Image 1 (spheres, one colour):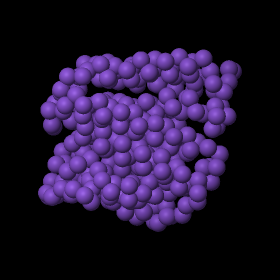
Image 2: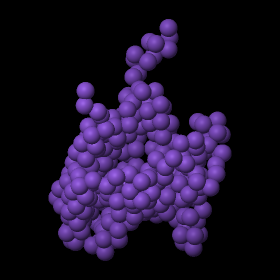
Image 3: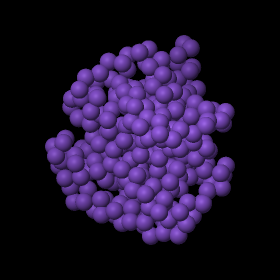
Image 4: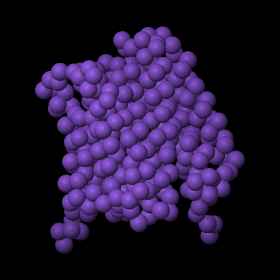
Length: 295
């Protein structure tokens, strides 16, 4: 009786929305820290690994070679994004990370043996057009040099490529019998090791604000967000709905940074981001309709 009342008060979709809202604070708290992107990423991954292990009751510690491979791509998605946030605007970093579906469309026919359609090609072309707009604004912006923004944009693209590879591996038949939390746990663990060589030669003195920021990032933006998202999907939220809700993240991410830190994305970035997100949402909806047989 109590379970029924709870499920009515908190439908599964609420957990997915909460998870996406937590994801969206990533850019804000990474930029809020005074430490480098490498150190911010190491700190958040440390707390995230502990959180994932506790939330899964240490079941995430089980892994095989395929899980480790997925974890390596997850490292790229985490690390490139964190460093990109320090070198370019939050809007550029998150929108370029959300080019991940482009790489999924390109490589799915080879890895998952999925059919490549004309609509896939059209979506890729449109998204590539949107991506190119991020590199048109070469003037210094938000105390960031043009060189820094360019490198940050490249890292944002690398984050999108890594995320695309990670999602592809999660969709692979070999991943069906694996606990997806395992790749998240080991991805965070590996990210700590990858960050160390960049930090040890020139470490930063951390303040209380820095520790608070990475704690929030690791425990809530990664750890609890992952738990809430998987809980919502496992309890009835369709994959399509979860994917569409997920696009709240790139929309809110730069908004939080603008409100609390005053960072303004360029007009080109906003326009390019709208093109990319719209193209991917349209393609996702169209693809889902094609899977539903006519009655």
